[in-house]
Amino acid sequence: MIRHFLSRLLMASGVCMAATAAFAFPDAGLRFRDDGAAAQSKALQQSFVRLGADRSADAVTQALGLSDQVNRVIGLLDLTQPAIPKSGAVCSQILGPWYSMGPVLTDTNAASVDKRTRTARGMTLACLDAVDAHLLKNKDVIVTGMLAAIAGWTRVDPIGTPRGWCTGYAAQDHWWPLRSMYPDPLINAVIAGCTARAEAVLAKAAQTRIDAAIAAAERTDRTLEAMVAAKWLPMPDLRIGDPAMARAMKERYEAAVLPIRRQVTDEIVEKLEEAYGNKIVADKLVRTARQACNATWSQTLFSSQDDGMRAIDASCKKMEADFVKRACKAALDKAGIETLGGPKLMTVARANGSLGPVDYNTMVCSAAIDGLR
Image (cartoon, rainbow, N blue to C red; front, side):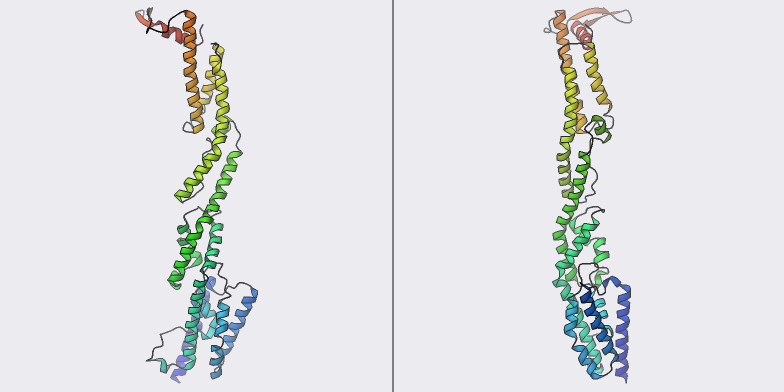
């Protein structure tokens, strides 16, 4: 009578644990590859329920005879979607009333436990081992599912590092909630496989982002105003957390955008060179050239550090310096003044009425540069 009571108690506790596992971790329940596999599982569960209600000795033998079907159903689990099935939750749902977890049956107490309980305990342990072995054997299937999920997440989320994706909260919360309920060899193998293969997934996500950034840059108008408004097309924040990948994407973006910047700066410099390039010293020409450069410089207020503006700025300064030399020489030649031999001093009246020395060459050059003839 006592053994019968204990047997019923253990069976009842097994059913309770099965219901608790299914309720607490619905994502870790039975999820199969297709409807046919789900139908096989349902039929097997119904068989265990029926045998659980049968108190005859033959029911124990029949339940034990379903072990091969248990292994076959375990092999039909869908491992491509989160979360990874927990062996306890899977076995509790498959075995139903024959799921039995409790104190280890040692030689000292095995005699006091009836055959039905020992059979249920043995079937439960065998099921748990079968699930864990199946998961470990099919770790690559799990990893493939994780990588597909990572590819989806990185369409909008920052692109981190492979190990960060494979061990971070996204992986833990979705694929192995409550890690203590999974065997360490399985999780370690999944993390290693995911980390090894995630780099290609993240590189593809980064490729998509850099392609979009370059395409947006290529749509920009090739004018100074458009370039200044776009701040000379700096690389947008692609939210790439891996430093090496971020550098590679930066280099690719700059290589693609540099010709766009050069096209604008080359056209601007060409126009400025036309303005400064005329050998005839004329007031209108000088003022036009300076106005062109000044107009360009005025737009460098927020862009002075950009490559394009630096190129224009350097060109303007060089052309101004060349023009000054050319205009000065032309004025001195016209005045018949030798440019060699050092300063040519002359005395002139100052604004306060006093007299002071002035370099004649400098005075002539300054007048010529200002457009006076």
